[in-house]
Image 1 (spheres, rainbow, N blue to C red):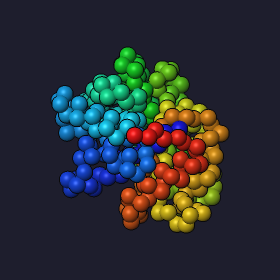
Image 2: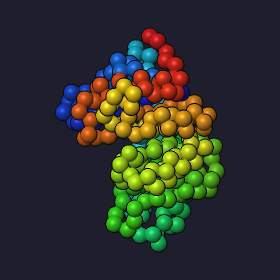
Image 3: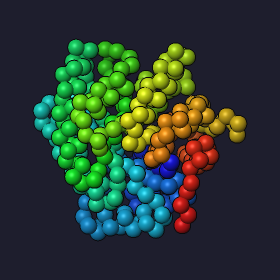
Image 4: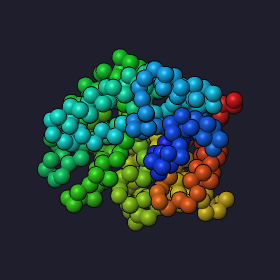
Length: 284
């Protein structure tokens, strides 16, 4: 298991100019991580000099690039939005290949009414099959994150995305398309705040998606005591991951804005999950 720092944690600092993508490898090393997951919009350029500078920053800090988060929200849009997102996934397949990054994190499309579910899943299947076939030629995986709930409208409290992700993976039938499960993205509210019945459903869905995992996400919040490090049941989640046999990258994300000290929380999260998942770390 290798732990990745997600640049999404520092969107505010990127916006203010405090950090840039080239700063992230050294920060990941400082906080105890093995790798980075980055957002597509963190790139300032695709020019060779800039890509080479980022590659050098990774190498200098002995940090790997675990994943690029594409955010293909246009899969639910009109034809031109849908095709645009397919092109973006293909573009970043080349970027990932150039940087030695194994995985792009992608989404299913959002639908407005329950009656629209099957039509949207057909669009998802067709688009992701096209992208997976293209990415495979470049040695790149696509990992579907359960994220649809954040685009919800008023029609339902999402409970079926795990089932839909598995359906699409099976229908696409390409071995470089899998899942990127996040235990906190099955419902709109954080896992720790859910009624017990919904918590159990989320744990079950997480365990099911781990069977198809090519990448993982994990959210953390304020660290309360040394004995109970996470508001979420980190012990249980780590046990589920160990049982699954997954041994790839796991990206750490913060609950925002309920974290006072990002640096402290991210450092403690790395130490917690490294211990629980018996994760080794390459030294400089």
